[in-house]
Length: 411
Image (cartoon, rainbow, N blue to C red; front, side, top):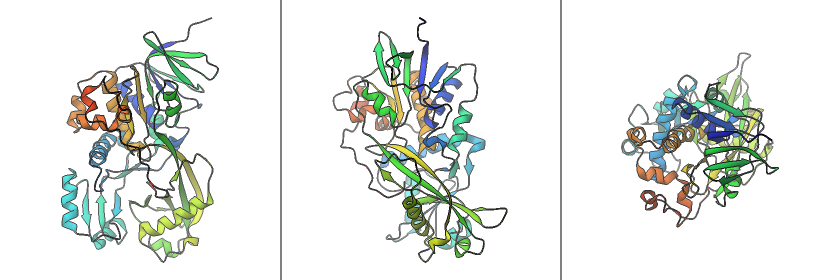
């Protein structure tokens, strides 16, 4: 009987997070084995072709604001030619008086210069974005095909081993190595260090090591609508993406006439059903009216032409869980990316690689990545009394009760 193969580094999960982390480790000269239960990469939520990416510009949640700016810059630098920069417009809240100078001042406090964010009056937004609303224009906002990005990150490499159709049910420490066991309780392989980037399955794998994570599924449905060339909606369609209560991509003119318009997404907490729901399409039709401030729009003219359903994984405090699992040395987590997979995966690749290789974090510091932000993402923030191994982070971690957003707002 042959012994299970040993790898210094194993990544569990070949979605956008696992693939990006693997790619970063390979670029740093490491040999990596990536494992997934599917026969190919990006089989679940990372099969999404229409993810949008922009810094968060709301008020409050200061760490989220700082983190999304840093993550956006990392993502922009990472994906280059497949980064579809079309700009994103974020309309002002309807119940708030829009004061342009105040909004611009707020944007500057977030270290977002005019090249990244600028307040527009409705007429300016109409000329640039095709939408007559006050709001913030994010010229560098983009969309990313997560499937393409995932597959690009896992192109053949002499130091890359891919194990497809391989399910890992639990992890067990044996001496200096971690054993990765399947559902038959057989050892599939052993590893010196394991990075778990398996979305909601991370919860099960952590539980096998007696670690409880506050992870929950959130189902999201994106709708693809076709619109006739002479329909009233045709004159209202945006030239850029819009992000607000829901989001949409720029309308696409079809060769045969008419338009294709992608609008999303529903936010169904606790749901894991991968099938299309007519009710989600109806919600997205209503959100389309709100995004365009087109209250008189006839939603029957938004004809269903397809959809995408993804089950996202979220943590209690709405931030991703990225970093070393300090009470289980050799284990690292990258999960709870929610609807910001394009951003958080780029950040996770840099942070986890720095931790795995025990870097001095100089590169992260140049991006503005301070110790309090490392703590804000660390798995240890959910475990009171478990931070003895990382005292520098302990004072900064939060053990507050997890709070999930209320349905059905799209995020």
